[in-house]
Structures are given as C-alpha cells and as structure tokens.
Amino acid sequence: MAEILAVAVQAMATDGVAGMSLSDVARRVGMRPPSLYEYFPSKLAIYDAVFHDGFETLNSVLRAAIPDFENDPIKALRTVHPIFVRWCIENPVQSQLMFWRPVPGFKPSPAAFAPSIEQVGMVRDLLQAAVRMGQLTEGAVTEEGMGLYSFIGSGLITQQLANDPAGGFPDGQYSRLASASLEMWISHYSPADHADRPPTARSTP
Amino acid sequence: MAEILAVAVQAMATDGVAGMSLSDVARRVGMRPPSLYEYFPSKLAIYDAVFHDGFETLNSVLRAAIPDFENDPIKALRTVHPIFVRWCIENPVQSQLMFWRPVPGFKPSPAAFAPSIEQVGMVRDLLQAAVRMGQLTEGAVTEEGMGLYSFIGSGLITQQLANDPAGGFPDGQYSRLASASLEMWISHYSPADHADRPPTARSTP
DNA sequence: GTCTATACGTAGATAGAC
DNA sequence: GTCTATCTACGTATAGAC
Image (cartoon, rainbow over all chains, first blue to last red; front, side, top):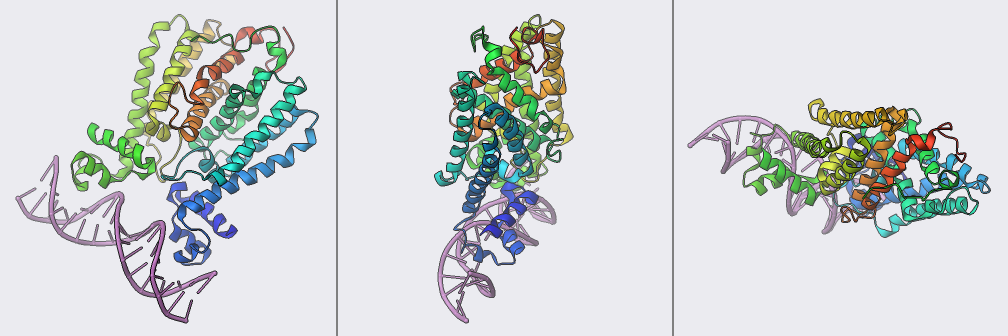
C-alpha cells in the first residue's frame, strides 16, 4: 500500500493531481489495474489516503520540532513555521490536495480529515502558551487570530505552487517571504504593539 | 462565444473545474460537440478564455470602484479590497483557475496572463500613491509588501473556497476576516506604527 | 493476490456531407 | 456553421480463472 501511494504521488506530480490514472499507477508498480483494487477500493480512496498521510507526516515533522522550545512558544513558532512552509512546498502534490480542491468529486473523509483538525489544535496550543506567557495578546487565539495565521501560510503556499512552482524553498519568489509574513502576524498580536490602543479599532465598515 | 463560455463556467461549477467536458457543454448550449470547434480550437482554449475574461472582468469591477478616492488611497484600498474578495468568492470557478492550478496541462497563455499583470500594476499604483501621501511606508510597494498583500487575499480566498465553499461573502468563516486581514497589512506598513523604531523591533512608542 | 478478459462509458478531436 | 459519423484512445471497475 505504501508503495502504491508513493507511486501515485509520483504520477500526480507528472500528470497533475487530477490527471492521475489507475492504469498509469499500475504500470509504474508493475501490476495490472485490477490488482490495485486489492489495496484500495476506488480511485478516490487513493486521494483520501494521500490526503490523510500528508497531514499525518506533516504533523509528525512539526511535532518533532516543537518540544525543544516549550518555555519560549514564540521561538517555537518562529522555528516551526518555516519547517511547515518548507514541507508544503517540497510536497506539492499533498499540499494541493490539502489546501485546494483540485479533484472533481473528491472530498476528504472524516477519518482523513482528523489529522488536519489535530494540526489546528497543535497550533492553537502553541499560541495559547504564548498568550499565557505574555508573548502574544489574547486576540492571537481567537477565530480571527487563527484565521489570519492560516492566511499567511495558505496564501504563501498557494502563490508559490501556482505561480512559481519551480521556485522551491527557501528561494522561491514567495517562499522567501515566509518569515516576513510570520513577523507581520506576530507583530500584529504582540502586546507591546497594542498596549495602549484597541486591537481592531482601525477598520472602516 | 460568450454563451459557450458562460455555459462552460456553469458546467465547471457543477462537475468541478477539471471535470468539464465538451460533450456536456455542447449539450447545454444545444449543439453537437464538433460545432464547438468553430469557436474554440481545443478544450484548453476554453480554460484560457475563462482565465482571461475572469481577470478582465475583475479588473473592470475594481477600476470602477477606485477613481472616487484618488486623494485618499488608503480609503480606496479599504473600499476596493472587500470588492475584490467578494468578486472572487462569488465567482469560484474563475478564482480557482486564477489562483490555483486545478487543470492538468493548463497553463494560461501570455495573452491570457496580461490582465493579471495589469492587476498587479493597478495595486502597485494605488499603494504607491498611498506612500507618496505618507499613508504607508515605502516597504508597502516593495516585493515584500506586495507579496504579503497577495497572501492575505489569496490565503483568504483559498481557505474560503476549499474549506467553506458554501459560506459565501461576507458571512463565510474566512470571508468574514477580509477587513481584519487588510487592517493587519495596513498597520504593518503604517508610518505611525514604525516611525521611531526599526521595522521588526517591538518596543513601546 | 494476481491475472486475463471485458463491460461500459466517456473523452477530445477530425472528416466530410449539407 | 452545423451536422452525422467516426476515429482513437483511455478511463474505472467487475467477473471469474488460477
């Protein structure tokens, strides 16, 4: 199963995520197409597995980087964020499935979605710790704070993959702005920046 | 041609952008598939036209909103940004083609890409005006400033279309954060916020 | 578990009549 | 410009032998 998935990802990389065909995957693993059905009940099940394993792998990569900085959450964030961006840029097939909806008819199953929810929890815990230590304002862990954080990540990855797919990390035209965008977000929720004025008072309806 | 394109967009909305088929489009316009080749030389040419017309339409929508505020560029930006986001969320097929790469084998032609470049120019001109009037720091019109601005837009639209496609604007889970994200960006390049300290330092003024 | 054979449908695109 | 007819190819998926 792992080999089939790895080969399927390769196939998606060359023919486009939505362009993967079972015949092609079967040929690449040295099988006939019907044999694949012993391992996955349908083509969409393969997408589901790639989606699920993508988040699982990414989560373990992130988890491995966090524990070292438990007493300095912002330092952990500054360390983990580029690791997150790098993994996504270097695994464009998984990222396209995880961030976009490139395959007609494919929606991740609840089981495949679980690691994605887990990742949101990891981020929230990290930010929550930063708030407790006075490194961030409370706004950082609101829907707004988490939402804006997701924008700088998904926006960067989207732009890099769509408009400069060969750019890679950290030298791509957009990858390059990974820390700059994170610093914008941190500074927006930094206590020092907002100590003496209301957090969101400058918007015009 | 306009009717074919409109119908093709409808077809992409129901079957997925990459799932559009010429037979289906032909049926919907009351033609046989070969007749479509009188208007478009290939299926990819239809994607190219949708991509091109999407940016053209969006540009004219934005242009119509800007001139009223030429003496207050930031006010123009605060007005235009939600209009931009709204159009993208309400035209998800075009947005997916414009922001993502959902169709295997499709890359916009240089001609189709021209209006996209034009849009970047429009934004740069607006921000440049804001800088000249002292409303933004010079960093706003650098590659970094323009890049971060693109992140908050493409990130929001990506998240809204991928994870809450029924949410719409302005009530969607992510759409709702359109002004908050813009204000984060504006405040990051606001002279008052950075007048007396280096860009990434966080001491209290 | 893997295969052959095949069902069953669809696709994009072209030839050529009218 | 639109059609019928067709080409050529490929797709996912199943049946059933071994």
